[in-house]
Length: 399
Image 1 (cartoon, rainbow, N blue to C red):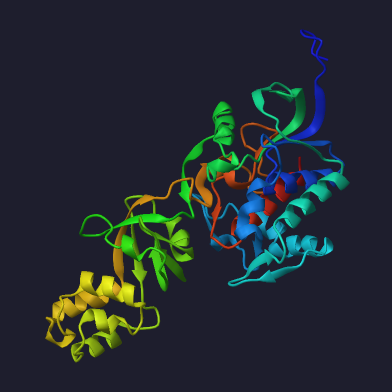
Image 2: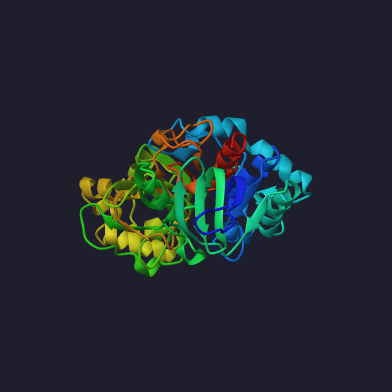
């Protein structure tokens, strides 16, 4: 009882802020240990990001998920949680709920029917262990003495352990906010500067001005995109403003605005073979490139990267430059599509402030951060959901 107001404060062992993948997994895991758990969600429904993921079929994990598939200021931080809750354990849970799934490519697992099945799985698991879910709940104030006290639009609450699973800034249309970072700042927990991750890029040529290929919007190519020592062979997609597609989203994690990245547009060819062919080629660059690219793409690249005359008549330096653009095209990420287009948020709560085993804040006992709000960002392809399951499980085992 609050003596000053005589208002009853409902007590819980654990309160989790955020009913996304990490928060719900944490609630389920803590509930299995007979902890009294309340999950607070400011949206009107739980798991909104899960529902839209994977084109509505939820790429819920990746068979190959390991520490090497994640970006963080401390690349080893995620190792403990991922090893203790690997993809195989979530797959087992999916199978227990009789959810049909399939491997699309590169170890990516999707629901065969609907992402709603994953949300229903998590809701059912939470219900079975007695974890309570409260939606349309906003938090007005958090205080900490011997326990955490929360003032909400549903009244005051208190708990022994407070878990921040708020997500981050990607998909603002789904209600994403900076609330998790504000909680960190309140308790003097350091933050690595957030930025959009897995996001389309607005490139500029390394030695020139604005992006000249807007007319190619909708064309897709197989390529190898590279940045920051990482390379990804997947499709790129030309857009009105720049580049998107899986290869570009992957490389964007390693390429902040102002930083370089490269594209190999002909991964099946070698520069040496291309140069040898071009040296005796009577076709101009446009016609020559039609052997590998759609006509519109061949026309745009050929006109941009080579003079309009037979390749055999070009200077050797001109042929070298053409092949370099095809196999090692240097670009600068001038900008990104922003959080509205980003799949995730890179950066976040500094892992140096957290225990890699429990996700507990080192300087604030009882305060935990899990999921996307933490400075751990996975590749495209189910890796970020696996981090949500693993980090939520890690905290749920100890709170």
